[in-house]
Length: 105
Image (tube, rainbow, N blue to C red; front, side, top):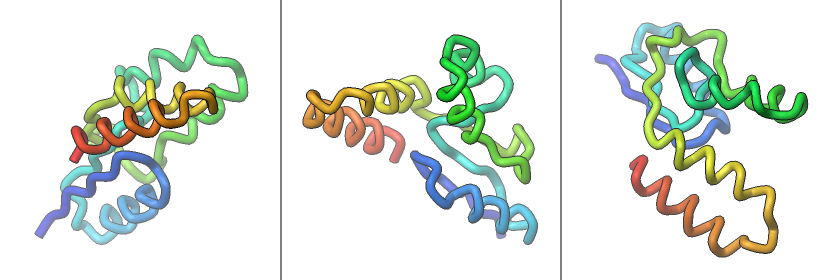
């Protein structure tokens, strides 16, 4: 039996994906933002400040091969991450995040 692990954020899903891969049960890891070659995250990193580039680099799990990762709704979730910088639009930000999570699901 193989498992497709899908999580729209990061949180503890890297640890779960790593454990599934080590035990031979991981079919794929699906997420919204992941730093792998060819992804929007990797392309946009060069335009970020040094601190934001470091944050973007944490969107990668060394235990997973790039082929193990499926990206879905990446552009929309990157916009959500950008909107978190603006407290004044909290209601709009939350609606956008929820719509993105719903589309991912």
